[in-house]
Length: 418
Image 1 (cartoon, rainbow, N blue to C red):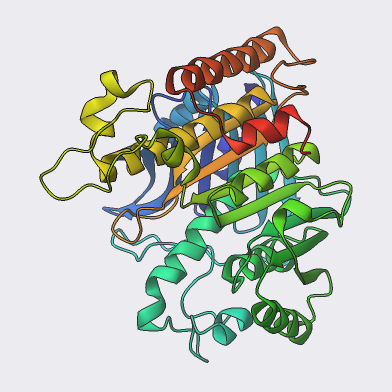
Image 2: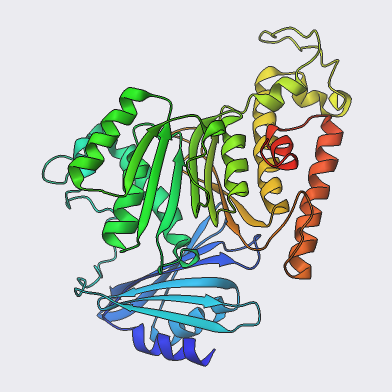
């Protein structure tokens, strides 16, 4: 830990802008920490904002205390990203505690951090700084102000970029990266990805947006040409049939409806994609398999028959009510998808995309490839990795046998996408 200790001696000063600590070794405690500088009673302190699945906690520490806190987190997390006015650092920490520090000097010195206590929330794309694609897509005005009716969309874009920011250490800087966005729609997030990764972070990337709506794809293509985004293209096509590439580094699929998400995930696994970001939508498949045979649609105050579902007797308090059965099916579907990805060698997280008040479809699956796997059995990697993949496969089998149901994703993975 000496190298990390020296790093914090260097960066914890007035030039410190921010730090993000992520990828925890244990999933049931603090899952992410953000650090920023503050001036409090004429002293420079560092505010640690730690997040669990449901809560956030704050504490302000002076330099030596902050240094010790960073070192403590180094034993609990796998990566840190640190920004100062002159440099950007990526810290990767192995299971044995060995730290790798990568330093990048900024081409132009960044402005110092705002040290006021009640400053506005920091966004990756800041209000007041005009971004061309946000203006054309109706999110920003000409002078960079956020259009009032698009505030939620602006927050969603920045939230998505935070997920991208977390996985930057997984992306190779030394070659062109290929990213596919299935079901890109109006492509707010596709343009945001390109702008953030290529324009702001300097990655050599090629992004392909795919959707079925010809007019939307045509419009997005015209915007990409207008901005000179040479490596951002849009195509009309179906997720299940797309064969335009042989190797993909990252697959994004946001709100692909029902089994379209399964086809996108299977494609990503088949391409051995390093990173998968998926926000599922309209999970009807399992709900149909759980639906009662000969049951009625159900009305307020009346219980539906649950005959036909093998687990009906045990799960009757859920299955007897259509609304509850639908939500239950959606959660089980996404849980099984996460386990399928784990069984294929991915470290998978189930995260909240945006606040529930904006949409109930707010679950994001973030998967990072950690080792090779085949079928439902890990073929290579550490013993602990193989055990984790094997345990995920066992969990899938038990759950599907209990419900006597099967997802399209399982069939696609078992048949190698066919």
